[in-house]
Amino acid sequence: MAAPKGGFVPVGRYDGANSIGAPFRAYKADTSTTLAVGDPVIDGSTGSTKGVRVVAQAVGSEGSPSAAIIGVVVGIEPISSDLSLQHLAAASTGYVYVCPAAGHIFACYEDSVGSQLAVTDIARSVDIVVAGASSFNGKSGVLLDSSSAHNSAGYFKIVGLATESGNAVSTSTSAYGKWLVTVKTPQDPGTFTA
Image (cartoon, rainbow, N blue to C red; front, top):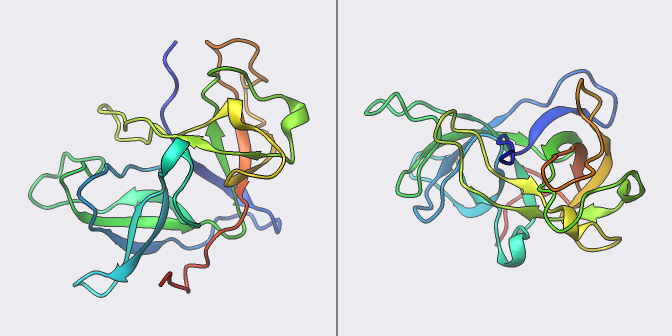
């Protein structure tokens, strides 16, 4: 079975609130990477000509985000020239809606490559592996890097196994557990990198 698509999905807040925080509008100016619903994003350090913050896909060497994660894409603003687009391709620019990382819990599948996450990995850090967006539904291909669960490095902290029907701890490389995570050190959307 192929790894599921979807990336990170906000499922709640760790302060117990029943809803996610209001997403903010941002602009994708980088034309070297695709941006899809479920992708974690970093601050692009500049504003767009439209007066909103610029974000970029959170990806660096070894699959780790290259800067503090500011949030997760939860929507793509339609582009009037092509209403069929469900993600922003590498050559495209456009507007996205971002759920702030601070205070939120996200669900994401693991990649089950090398090893699988276990309940003993709860409270440990984990990195991500970036894969292409689904051409069918435009969802992110980002997964948790199951072989990277460790105690200190990593941009996400494992909170627990997602409690949904059919989800279980993976026991093989053809099964994909869905885990709840938080961003360890999120960037506040009200601040900008230099």
